[in-house]
Image (cartoon, rainbow, N blue to C red; front, top):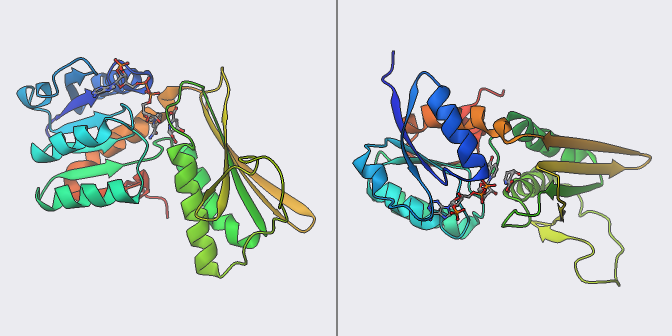
Length: 251
Ligand SMILES: NC(=O)C1=CN([C@@H]2O[C@H](COP(=O)(O)OP(=O)(O)OC[C@H]3O[C@@H](n4cnc5c(N)ncnc54)[C@H](OP(=O)(O)O)[C@@H]3O)[C@@H](O)[C@H]2O)C=CC1
Ligand SMILES: O=C(O)C1=N[C@H](C(=O)O)C[C@H](O)C1
């Protein structure tokens, strides 16, 4: 049997961090050794001997947290959003100087959301039009969501590979923003509504038919099994991994 994994949680008092702490404490093979929030000293992770850090904080602070983890040889499993290519490149650069350290950036840890992204990419080349609508609670820091960005990128890649035509859209006048954000040529619309948790629809359409792929996270416990998968796998995956898919047997 593998030894118990010592885990530190950054953003431990947050909405997702609270659930992650509970899951790490409950699992037989993980031990919660440090909890760090905005007003705490990040050095506590080192003092406590954390081997893996889980980060659910804020796009504005996550890069500083990751630089600290990489410099101290602590693996990181990251749910915090806000990662563009420039940030991923920066992580690769830091990791090049820290052989052995692993960082997982997962835009969404829920199995349903991962499958929703996969199904959307699979279906996208078969339809003329594909648009993404993400719906979240209004306390969310970023828009569009990390999941929506990733979904749009996967859809765009699948359509490029299939040689799909550009999507039809005759819009030439109107109010700025009405057609959502353009992510890699895919329109993404972000709704912020009190009462919601995390939801996404991908609408696909072609002559005479539409297909809607919808995922709903109704409770933040939906993220914790995936986080534990990441915690258990990250030490065996040095370097940068984007998306939990690579740690799951989905084929
Ligand atoms: N990948 C995924 O599956 C998911 C990703 N997310 C993402 O995770 C992030 C957090 O979401 P959520 O839990 O809803 O947000 P919350 O605002 O509820 O929690 C964030 C927590 O991070 C803390 N924090 C802020 N700065 C620091 C810092 N420098 N060091 C340590 N802790 C800090 C905050 O403390 P304080 O309140 O004191 O400022 C707060 O406790 C977001 O980016 C969200 O999009 C969310 C759900 C799923
Ligand atoms: O902030 C959230 O709540 C969520 N953030 C992630 C995202 O931006 O995709 C994952 C999920 O949608 C919940």
